[in-house]
Length: 78
Image (tube, rainbow, N blue to C red; front, side):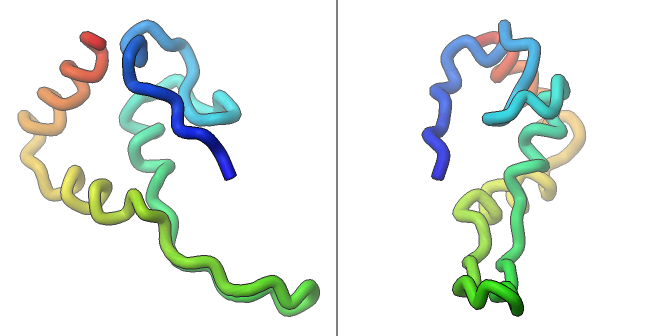
């Protein structure tokens, strides 16, 4: 479980996500999409549900290119 970092200052960050794996804000948004995971056949760990962010990511994907850019510009202004 990870604590979500506040968005204030996101425009000054060099890396994104909890492990800093991307420096691209759009990639960071897309990386939050996660379908449900099947139970592990070896460990028998329970099935994980889809990410709570999926609805927001899908809505973002449906935006026009101009609207997506406006959101990215807003985030960079924080």
